[in-house]
Image 1 (spheres, helix red, strand yellow):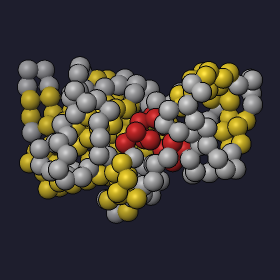
Image 2: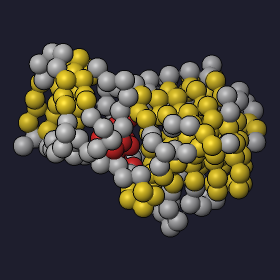
Image 3: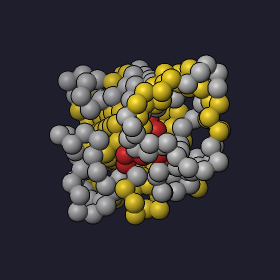
Image 4: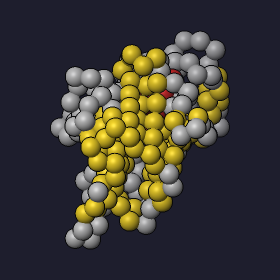
Length: 220
């Protein structure tokens, strides 16, 4: 009922079915023991400290079936006070905005990592997909600092959007892009950063593969 519950220190929440809804859970070095099942409704906020190595969108109801809009579930996992959000070998539909003004799908908060599981040849098995007919400016935005995206494929729905944008609002720093594969976008990777690490990126079927901003210089 929209209450705030503070969990006693060093407890472990073990889920074997059912989910929690409508309120705020304040952890105190709290652990979670659960599989890839729904644990929390999207109206639940997790605050405090959590002894969890990685969060999963499935905990917030993500389906990963390539049809259901999983954007909010992914964003809720990223907004947890946990540094790693892990995607499974699934296709996650992104069909709505976290930032409606700028039409941005996923916003990766500072000090957070969005990781896929693996790559098959060069194509990532963890896929973010946008549908045809919905106008996006950016699918995934990283403004940092200390944010990472790794082993992710972005399947764009049209040639007008940017798949991954680094430094959307201001110059970003300490960003890591590793093993990113982009298909069917206007711009694959839009990069406005310094002191960052870009290890591997592949863009195909795009108007611009890499748009790199520099000091008074821009390059494509």
